[in-house]
Length: 168
Image 1 (cartoon, one colour):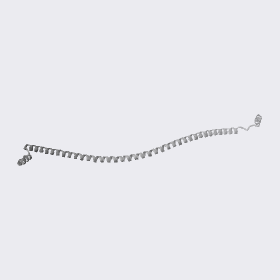
Image 2 (cartoon, rainbow, N blue to C red; image 1 turned 60 degrees about the vertical axis):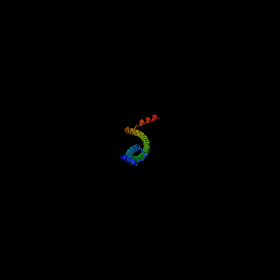
Image 3 (cartoon, rainbow, N blue to C red; image 1 turned 180 degrees about the vertical axis):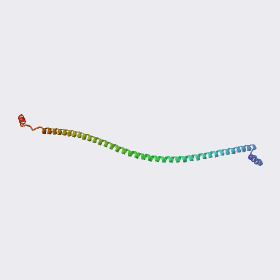
Image 4 (cartoon, rainbow, N blue to C red; image 1 turned 120 degrees about the horizontal axis):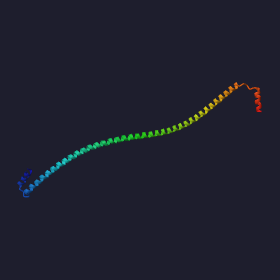
């Protein structure tokens, strides 16, 4: 329809520079070119819309990932603080452990020393008990002798003289 109007305008003027077939062909090409350009424009608009949608999705993903990175950074900082506290606690426990090991060694030395002292004292007790037994035994022996001596009659004069003579 548009092509017919254009053809009619050119026919009215009757200019010799164009051929009716060429004009028809040019109009046909122009129409096809216009249609192709419109189709291409539609494709480009759809592509642009798709890119815009993709861009929006990527922006949302970037925002999400940025938040995730920030969250992970905060968690990393918290973990670093916890590890630092654990390191301090581990050092304190190591120091305490070393002190306890030293105290344990000192206690073991003291135990050995006290054990030796106890053994020495036990030996002294045993020795003293033996002495007490010996003293009791000799005391009892003396008591018996006293008792025997007291029960014996006094030696007679003749007996004493005999002893005296024997000694000389």
